[in-house]
Image (cartoon, rainbow, N blue to C red; front, side, top):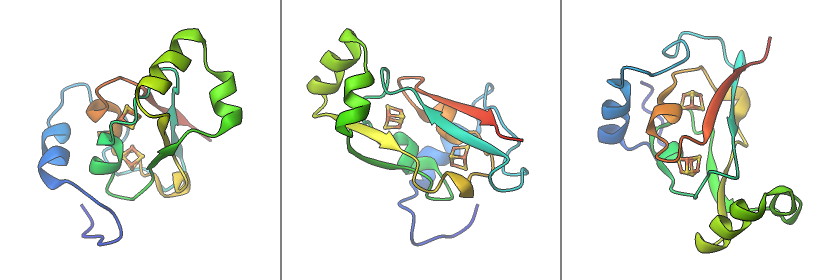
Length: 117
Ligand code: SF4
Ligand code: SF4
């Protein structure tokens, strides 16, 4: 894993996620942007594990945009309010190399790796 001081990598959490038997993707072997992580905001509770484990600083957790909040279902809105309206965004999605760590680290199973090309 790269030693990138710009990310807030939690190495212990990342090591644990790396051992998960259902870890998807290409274990960092994919060219950047071949895959993109997609966050299901109806499930996301802003728990930050994706930020903690991504070696490439793809994620940030922040207040959900009003337009995205409006798209949530009834339960999603309740959940979002209960968690301070925090959700994960992927401002650096182009840096994703499909290590799959975020998918298995997310306690809400809110992330899917989607093949782009
Ligand atoms: S996507 Fe999952 S790991 Fe990331 S902030 Fe949301 S709940 Fe947490
Ligand atoms: S699969 Fe997830 S953790 Fe891995 S590089 Fe992509 S966004 Fe980051």
